[in-house]
Length: 245
Length: 390
Image 1 (cartoon, each protein chain N blue to C red):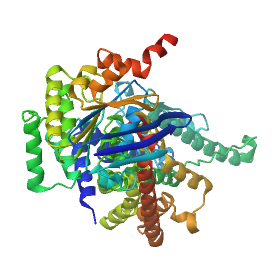
Image 2: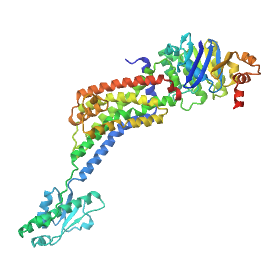
Image 3: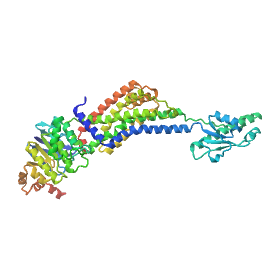
Image 4: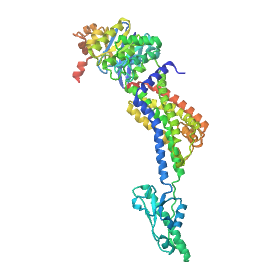
């Protein structure tokens, strides 16, 4: 479980996150929704311990991220928006490297890699260098890299960006599977249909504040709109800002 | 003792780098191509020096001018005989110039008249043109001697013949040339650690940022120090291998170089090779550490490459400054990186023995500074600014 308590983060004079609190519970898919520059990526990076927050607390499995970042990272699987693969390594070597960084060895490591290759259906890609992989294939390797060491919690920053329908369906199935196994999943997305279908809870961030933290249905009801997209636009005030601009 | 995480990073970095042919080629190009280029440069230098050595000339009708022959031999000419019946117009062979003693030479001299000689030369070749000029100057000198003798015989002092006496002194001593080439060789060896790990350091640091893979790596349960050490060891390996190939390859290649023609005497035995390698190896540790640190400061591969190319000039700048000042640094400064290696290496290849304290303390200083460099690099990886292009 990931708990965010009143965090704030500034870059010089710019306050990217002003006051954000929410929980990503085990066995749930929590989605972070917000316009560009709303503070989503800053929040996700802070959870991973890549950024030092100015105030508040971030707890992963009850432990403060900044007290023991190395230990916390053992329970975090992170898929960034830029997949960042090593073009000269094969898919299998990617999984091997990240499993080894998490202390896996020998038969345990081999079994974990084999399981991920099966789960993502990428056995035919396993021994090919990732240079030349399609976006979907790259996404699968990035996902496998975060899954192979069996973390308890997953953080995905816009994982479906640029993926084709088949890859998106596979990703959805995978996230549901992880949720059913009791993992906490936190991801950010811009695709409303996907958010509405997948999320157990949606956290909407605008101007560094949480403006909604409910189930998709409750948010739609709260905003009094027809769908999540309209609710998002109304709650974040994006339309008004655009009109003023 | 290498921890298993450092080993994991090292193995991955090594595998990744060895698969990049361009990076590997760039890393080892200096070590493999350098010695061959060195041989070419030394051969070229030797050929220039050989060209400026005593001219080889042929003489036609030499029996007509025995005193002139004796004079030219005394000046150091290598003299060949040219057949009296052959026409110079058909070629004069490989000699620099042909000197033909013209008919009536002997008679004209004995009667106190002007005797004629003719110089044939291929003026399209600079070295032959130069040799012909020297020959003409030397014959003119011989002519002056005869005139002086005639003046003395007629009761006149020879000094009357010359109102101004010009003397020209050749300062292009072979010793100075040899010294310059010795310094060039020293730079060639000391630059090896810089060029051998340059491309791999950039790839492992700036490349990681450019590929956008650094962010994912920093979220893994490995300390930034372990991460940096793993990458550094891989770069050090290239630095050490490159330095070894350059030193052992370069010094063995030098045994085939015409060093005696240039006037250089170097110690190229196995003991000197090992000593030179040991004096430069600590520099490979420091250079790799600095190269990774600088590469991480850069936002792209290209930017890092520019900085590191500039950094590679440091040994030459330090070396030239030391040479221009004409001083040998003593005290703490003599143990500074590059200074210590330059001074120790010079002793090894010229005198056959390096200054052991300089070599050892200089090496330890390099290793300590490497550790400091690694510490700062690991701190840089913890800073938020590193994510700006990660």
